[in-house]
Amino acid sequence: MSDSLSTETDERLAAAVGQYALGELTMGQAAERAGLSRFEMRSTLRASSVDLRVGPEDEERAADELDVARAVR
Image 1 (cartoon, rainbow, N blue to C red):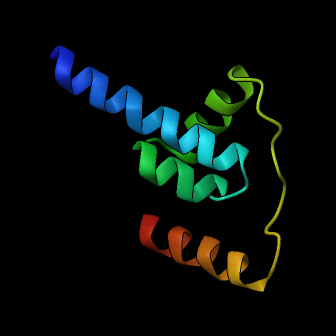
Image 2 (cartoon, rainbow, N blue to C red):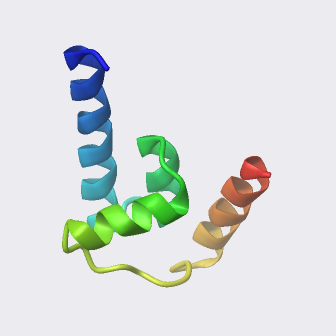
């Protein structure tokens, strides 16, 4: 992988982790933005000492999670 591509990937991952930690993204959204599976994202968050949130915060977030899950099929 070239350095610029690696840097871009690292920046996307860092941004997704940060936005998840701030509650701006769900885990599914963060994984999608980072280009990871939900399982990879969960491992990354744990390795980054980010507290995992279980379940959507509200109905809108639940609908967002459902949309992401449908897109993955």
